[in-house]
Image 1 (cartoon, helix red, strand yellow):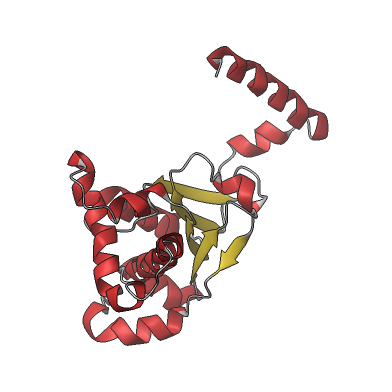
Image 2: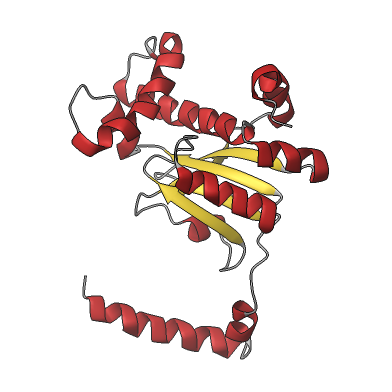
Length: 208
C-alpha cells in the first residue's frame, strides 16, 4: 500500500462530505452522542462502521484480538465505563466473526509468547463449553461454534460490570451478541437474553 495515497483518499473523502453538507465537519467537531458501544475484533477485514452501515459519531468503538472483555483489561473496562456512564449509550454490542485468527490460535497447542495470557481467556471459554465443542467433528465448524460461544461469554463479562447493571436498571440498556460472516457479509444476531443472564449471575455478580 502506498501510504501517500491515503492522504489523497482523505482529500477526496473530505470533498465528498462537503459536497453533501458544507457544515458536515462543523457538526462532527461539536461532540459525540453515540447510541452504541461496539466491541469487536481487530481483524482488518471487519470494519465496525462499514459492516453496520453507519457514519462517524454513531458508534463508540473498541477493538482487540478476538473481541475479548476480560475484567483484568483496564483498556476495555475503561471504554465500557466511559461509554455507558458518560456517553450514555443504550446498546452494547460484542461482535465476533467466523474464521477468527485469534480463536484458531487459542485452539492450537503452541507457545505463542506474549499472546499466551490473552489467548488463555479464549481457552477458558473452550474449557467451559468443552462437552459441546468436543462433539463437533468438522474442525472449521468447531472453530466457528467457539467464535459464537466466545461472543456469548464476553457478553456475560459485559453484564457482570456494575456500570452496565446500573444502566440496565436506570434506562434499560441492552447487550447484544453478534457474529459477522465474512463469506456472506451478514451480521448474525445471537439473541443474547440479557435479563435471563443477569438473573442467573446476580447472586455472585450483583454489584449495587
